Length: 104
Image (cartoon, rainbow, N blue to C red):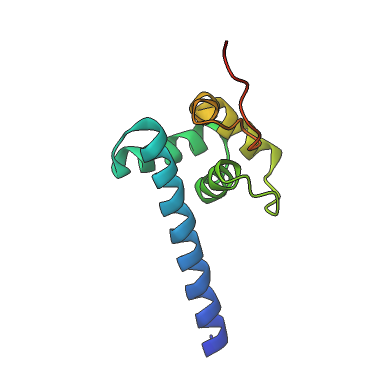
């Protein structure tokens, strides 16, 4: 493995760690839970919905921050919606980042 491949692999790991950390932060804020509980929730939800935990984490962050540049897989959108859609809606956004309907 040459130096460029090593750098790319390291950058990919760092990017994955950042996305996972951001997803954990989203869940800590929404659920008022610990980082460990957030991590466990991501892993269990990924297993339950048969999606990769890192894709689920990236999808959760993309949806929470309304990142339309990230093409979120339909299965990931469905998993995020089922697991955390109500929490995202209560935070002021629906699962696509649009303003949530206001209850009257």
